Every structure is written in structure tokens, then in C-alpha cells.
Length: 367
Image 1 (tube, rainbow, N blue to C red):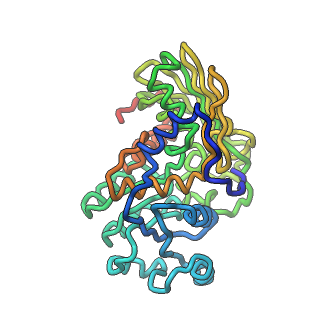
Image 2 (tube, one colour):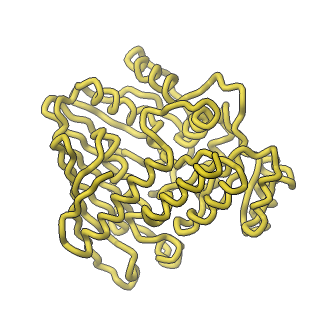
């Protein structure tokens, strides 16, 4: 996805927005928490920078530390965000955070294949973990991460920012209220033309896969929260038109289909070779909902059979981090879960998608 500028956290609400605001306040926006979640960010790349900027507007979370293998980045972040030297670590010594009472949680924002070992190390250091998605490169590793955090008695959350996005939550509210009738169909389109062929996302050893591990996970996860169920079968097909750029193990384009226990069917596309693909569409026998764009960093927009969705524009990472403070400290329950178990389900689905691409067979699921 193309980088978009940071947008204002909220816009004025009309009376029609008030039910949604109540949902946000009750389910994910903890504005009365007395305790501030003190976070160290691991991985100071482009998305880590986006999270850091968004956290400047948080009410319940604060950036207090950094972990990086690049000394110049640490120095720059120290200056920009007033981070004390005692809260700065590299990848060799960050286990020492166990002795730092000023850090409550570490947000892991490194290449996918590194998440497993880094999350387990953070858990063993006794700190809560927030991990960027996909949580790992397969479900087995994901479950090991969940088990390690449980053994260490720390929480493991995943950066599912869309689970707190107001337009998304309004569609979920309408579905739960039966306003779409019986849900019949979902379509998710997730893709963009990826650039630099030397970047880590196109390196199997770091990414664990191609477009599916980066952008396709939005449609995988989106199908689940839009329909409100978990799939029971999957079929999938891979297309590769540029094998020089997309090496073995790096998927260029995957189409996948899923079936759900309530009878809904899903058709999705994940690609690194097409732009203008960021759309969710949900259809029921009494109505429909569309998000366009559905998952981008900028304003989300949507409509239903009743008209445009009137919901506030937010900075996703600001709302996410404030909500996660409430989850960690107060056991708040978001409308859609953001815990490690939720992420393992997505990884099981992605594992099955890759298996279906290779075998050409329908893969049955039991999530």
C-alpha cells in the first residue's frame, strides 16, 4: 500500500454516529485508564515510525523505549521522542529489559520470520508483547508464541488495527443486529504493485511468503470479522507472471475461496502485481456493505444499502494502542479479538491456502 499522510484523529460526529461512538467507548477506547502503557518499539523502519508518530496522540499509551540494530536510528529516535538512553537496546542485549521497570510492553515490528524468536525472548523477559501481523510465518510457530507468553504470564496482542476502525465496527454492529439478513457472500481484494525487488518482503527467509503474508492477510482476517464466523474449507490458486521478481516461495498473486458454516461463501484476491485493490464487499439477503478503501492507512470509507456510513475518521494506530492499554491493564474485550489465538487462526488459514495452491485440492479446516 502506498504511504498516506497522517490524518486527524476524529471529525465531528452527527447524531447518526452516536451508536457507533458508544460501541467504540465501551469496547475499545479506554479513556479513563489511570495507568499508561509504556511501550518500546522493536524495529524502527517505516511502519515502526508510523506507529511512533501515531502514539504521540495516545491518551493511554506512551513510547518510552526502542530496540534496533542501527545505532543511528536509535540516536535519531532518542532526540525526536525524548527517549532516555537506559531504554535503548539492540538485538543482542534486549533481554535486559527484564530489569527495566519503565517498560511494560514491546511492540515487535520486524520482518515476519523474526517475530517468533523475538516475541518469545520478550515474553521470557517478563514484558507484554504486541506483534505486528502476520504474527509469524506459520501456525506452528504462532502457537509456540502463544504458549510461551502464557507460560511467562504476559499478554500477546497482534497489530490488527482494523479491529478498532469505526466504519468496520459499524458494519459489524449492523451484521450483529441482523440488518443484512442472512450473510451470503464476501469479497476481499487486497493488492498493490510492489517495488524494490531487493526488499525483505521478497526474501523468503525474512518474509515467509509473498503477497499473502503481507497484504493478503487483510482479506483472510477481514472475511472472518465481516462474516462473524470461521471458515470450514478453502480452495486456492496461484498465478505467477514474473518469476524473475517473485522467486520460489514468494507468491505474486493468489485467488482463494472459503466456505463458512452459516452457508456464506468467500472469494478473495491477494497480489503484489496490481494496484487499486483495497475493497471489502459483504452481501446478505436483506442488504449489503462495502468498504472502499477497506484497510489502507488513510481514511476508510464505506456504504451500505442504507447509504454512506457516517463514522469518525481516526488514526488507526492511535486508537489501536489506546485500546491495547485497556486490554492489557483492564482486560477490556474488544468487539473483535486481537490476541495471539486470533492470529493463529489466520496463520492456519494461510497455511491451508498455500497447501491448496500446491495440491489443487479443497482443504478442510477446524479452527
